[in-house]
Length: 415
Image 1 (cartoon, rainbow, N blue to C red):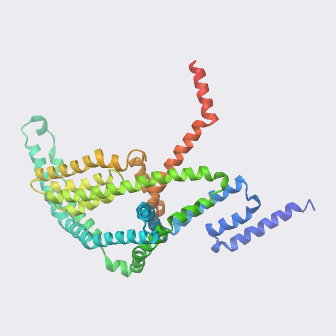
Image 2: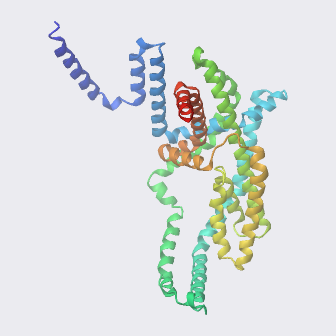
């Protein structure tokens, strides 16, 4: 019997491999996760079981977000909106307003703001964006003429050192070829409704928009209403022997994430409004468009300044008199950024979160590349989580025997 055991093991292994190969169309990470959890049942209650299930569950969740990210995006957006708006409902609840009616009031107010934006602001943004694209060829032609005039002025300079430079090579660029290339790029930016509907993407787009318009507000309402019940349910899932440490970590994470999200959203709203109103007051073209760009991209600190400054400077260079337009751009951005940098951001966001703008941008690029729109929505919460995990890991390392041993060796060598 002992001699036949290797043969039986090989036969069973071959049969198992053939079985798995034959049912491979129905094998997904979710199915495999459930099977593995069942097979690991004899280890239930051990540290190895807990670590394996957490690791496998995390990998399965990442796969699910990667595959079904577009369908999960409304749910994730609803969860983030409920998380951001929960303090408002809590405040209403302390004013003897039931949580259900508080959630209705907050979601209704948010819906009213979105509706007013769609009616008043969005058409202006689209109109200014369309006008900007239409005027762009003429702006570029004016910029080309200005460039050629400056080069010619340098070529005609009476100074010997400047006159000896071969500026003629800078004028060899054919402006016509540049304009043809830019015009082709502009045409490619124009929306093509016929192509979208003809390829069948129109129906999918319509369902996606419907999901955001209908599903996201409904999910936000129910999550707001039952937010604390969900928190208690999640707390009960944590094993008792790890509950105190885990809940302490989650409370710190909740405090940091809430401080960053709510603070940065308020700062972005201020920067967008102040930039748009400032450009409108000084009579600068495309004021609303520049304000929206500054506000949306300022969710990542300082990115709104860079992204909105580029088109503002470009518009200023082709708007005569140029020096007055440049002064308008410099004045608006200096006032807005000075107020934001020296008063608003330190007061609202503060330095406690400590999320560097480069870290935030890397998180958005990385998670957006891997998980699409859902990754973009989860980028900042995950960036805060990773930062907190790194800090806790480093703190644990400093308390470990390895760090103390290294310190003792260093002290001995110094002595």
